[in-house]
Amino acid sequence: MSDMNQKEPENIEVWEDLVHIKDLGLALLICGIFSLGGYFIAPNNTSDPLFYGLAGAVIGFIISSIVIKPKRSFEESGEEDK
Amino acid sequence: MDISLILQMILAAGIASVLYTLIGVAPGTDETAVLAPVTLVLVLTGFEPIVILTFFMAAIIAKKLTDSIPVAVAGIPGGVMSAPMVEHALVLKKHGMPDISIRKMASGSVIGTIIAIPITFILANGLARFSDIITQYTDPIFFFGAIFLALMARNKWVALVSIFPLALLIQGLRHLYWGVGIVPEGETVFISFFLGITIGPVILTLFELLNRDLRSKLNRYNTKTISVKSNWNIKGFPNPFRILTKNETITSSLTSVLGVITFFLSPVGMTILLGEVVSSKIKDPVKKAARAISSMDALTNAAYISGTLIPLIALGLPLSPTALGPAHALFNAPPVFTQDHNLHHILSMSEFLWATIIGAVIAILITYFVTVKYALQICRFVFKRIPHEAMLGLFFGLVLLLAFMDAGWLNIAGVLLIGLVAGVLNRLGVNYGVQFMTLYAAPFIVNNLF
Image 1 (cartoon, rainbow over the protein chains, first blue to last red):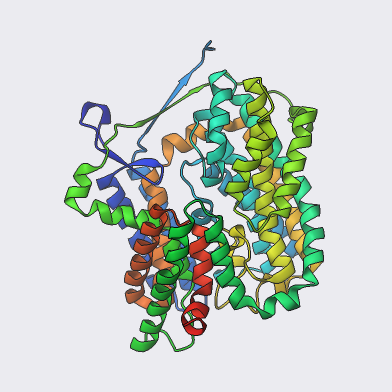
Image 2: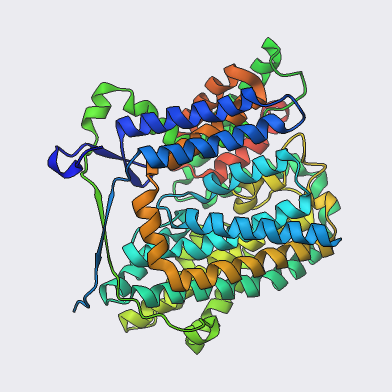
């Protein structure tokens, strides 16, 4: 996750956007563990496990968003062109 | 309806609008992948049916409003449905008018929504009279539906041929689960197979990443550069009818009506077709692009609303690409909703109307004004803060969860298998519509046809 521009290009395209293979693996692992983890720790009432699983998935998503840097560079220019 | 229920509906619509405003902006978010799992989980969690419908209506309207933002700002489609608009939006971007582009598209969306709702209800009412006859032939209808969608596809032969092996795979797994006893006989595994098809293309790519040779052959990129101009000229209270010219309003209204009537056809196909038809006569490139994107966005909104509501209100069977895809959980989410007991059977006409109106009004109030005013800020947040890896991780987590719930650990392998096959079929040109219709038709194809 250091400065990407210094290295060889190593991002690949999955579903219309760029990802780094290791980061993708990490995100799948984090989200997978939290979703199923939430499901298993939930008290065994009617729909609780699903709800905990969903919450786990969202937590996994938030953690992945913090840990992983998006592979996009967003440039803004203030001046008119043409 | 009591006050607390109405408050719940308003709250659900508000949450859906904010959530799908952000999701809509993220590139590559397929409508089915982002709408179906979340709706499914809400249904299974046991929310009031009318609250779920309100949530869904607000979600699709918000999503359709905002997926035009990255198209206008960066020329990147925010979803499958906005892909046909990229070409025209790039014309406006080249002329330095991404702000105009967003305003035209968002206004088109609003017009599409306003026109689609009344016509949808009228058409659904008319069709409801035939529902008894139609529902007697459910099974063959799904089979012929799959064949119809295959024939409408660009690669019709491969789509047609693939219906049978896919049906065999689906039924084969179901019988296997019954055979080894992880699912009680007669209980049909459905949700996780549906999700397996949805994320099929991603599963296939993930498998390819595990192969060293294929991995080394992949194109490598640095980062995706997205450049925008931050000089936005948006002031005051945006009025959709003032943003569009008279001609644009007329063609947007016209394409919306056509979008409603053709609810059973592919919305993407109709968008491409009608977008060309309404703009082909215009010479000036800027006017042509503005006319095309406003009409196309109106049509996609109208097609999504009618594609969800007409089958739901009139039949209770998912007989449109939208109903088979994003809106799927409203029709079939066992054990809560089944083909004989879903929103169609639970809600009355006035409840359908209220859910739609509350969902639409709140989504438009929140998302339309936010979209038109803060498009740049939203883009900056999503592009800089939300990694694509996390989005894929989230879908993957939800799929794992629902696969495990359906039939335990073995089913995770089952869903990977379905995803793998669906991904290959997708790459061969068999679209989601054909695959989802086959999922429905599978029992009929295997048990009755041979």
